[in-house]
Length: 212
Picture 1 (tube, rainbow, N blue to C red):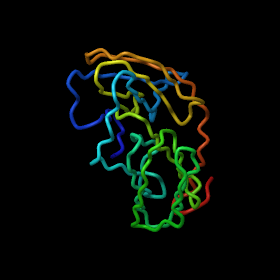
Picture 2: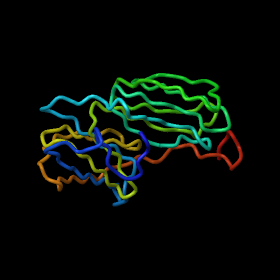
Picture 3: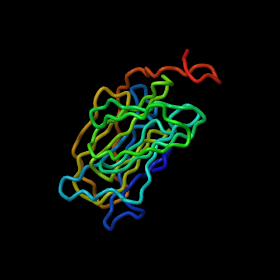
């Protein structure tokens, strides 16, 4: 699945008949827009559709960074990790939802894993300390990621859902039950408290390790 800087990640290419559209706006305490917030809708009264088999989800290493800071996939999806860099990496995760390791991962390789357990998978690199990314595995195809304006749009059939809102800097996810009406103007707004950004700063340009 290609990274989205704007909105709309849904199951399939077309909205289902009787679809409802939910717009979620996420802001921080000081009214700042919050990007990279994950919104997922888990059906409460209907079966969950399976993942789209043809979808290609990937988190690449390029320019000594992960190409997407936050990626969302449905449980049961395969995710590829292509090394598009000119240097080796050491991709790993110690997360409960999925533990794996790709040591001395050479340029041109593209290993993949199936992520069948819902949860947060934190990705690191043992060679480049500043490289970090998050793969969010959710039990639903109805999800979206907020853009630079703090806005995320999810399209799903009308009905009852458990809404989950998550961000890397939130202390805990927000969960609530909502009912989507069959109309395009369902809206929710959240004001969240974010922890300080503790990401390691990248070293000077041209260096492959170290940080400032």
